[in-house]
Length: 499
Image (cartoon, rainbow, N blue to C red):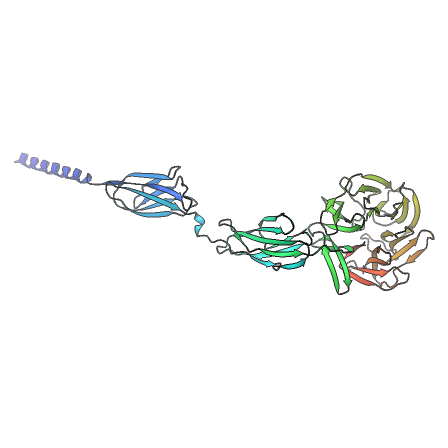
């Protein structure tokens, strides 16, 4: 009886075991394969990850973007394709037993959902405007819907030649373009980029630069902590034309025009030294003249240099020495040295180039002498010596018979070189007569930096309060003894020149 029971149980177990193996054999499989490519270009995407959900089966694409997943249980799946820098792609799949399904994923770049900047708006100058200065401030604006940083590309063309002015990676929406050609019409366009989407271009706008001005006056003005040089044309007290010739990004001062060369020479700070440069009268074609021997004096705001009358050479001071150099920077030579070691601060070359006027002083600017030398360095005339106070502004008359200069008649001397009552004087070499030309000057003011007009009918000069903080104004006055008629030309201006 016991044996029968054991045989029965064994048969039941064998039957159950066989049934279990038959059930496992009923699980069926299929294959999923395909390719991952870039949207639009259909270039293959290598090493993209293929994942099945709800299982954790994964695969990666090869160099050609293909993938293969074999022996996958037949059922419903969500298949994903992921790759850094691309938006993830999803596709539903119903895999039947023994079937092979082919899938193609077209992935878009991750930035596909990012919006580009708005079309740049050109705000200024107004489209079609004319008679602009050759330094133009461009104003434009674009916004980004996703608040991405926007950078700009500026492109400027003209109707004169094929030159293209381009500025890349501009972040400010105000941009100043300088040294534009006079009389030329310009076409400008802005491109805005968020670094993600394609650049967005603005419309094209135009402006035209005024014709080359024929300004007779040149002077210096302080802007943004630096000296800048202007040319100006005085029409009347209510109308003055001014043209900015140098940028506030450089320190440039003491303009001196030579009509024969049709160039303006000036001083500029360069690598902590002061050098002479030249430029055309419209501020273009700037060239450096001095190099090895810079301009040096006790006070660089007081220093002056001089052209030869034919415009081929320039003389300038360097401590106690006087140098001569060709306008192209060649031919540098020392032509004079003071016998007592005094600094040379100012020089002026006579029109016939036979003599040079010098103003010398000690390291504080005082113990001044004004005298003339011939081209061999011999002293010819002593105009002034042994007087206290500040002296300056030397300028020959055209015929060389007289010399214009200024002197502080108060005799005041201080560490900051303050002047209290500076007058203009004219010294005649033949008679040694000295004439005061500052009658009518207001009390408490100084007359400074005088220059004779081209026809010597007038004198141009600076008048300012002796408090050293008030505004400086350039005036002109008839070159007649005892005149009191003064005409204000340019406000907030110094170091005048009139050619």
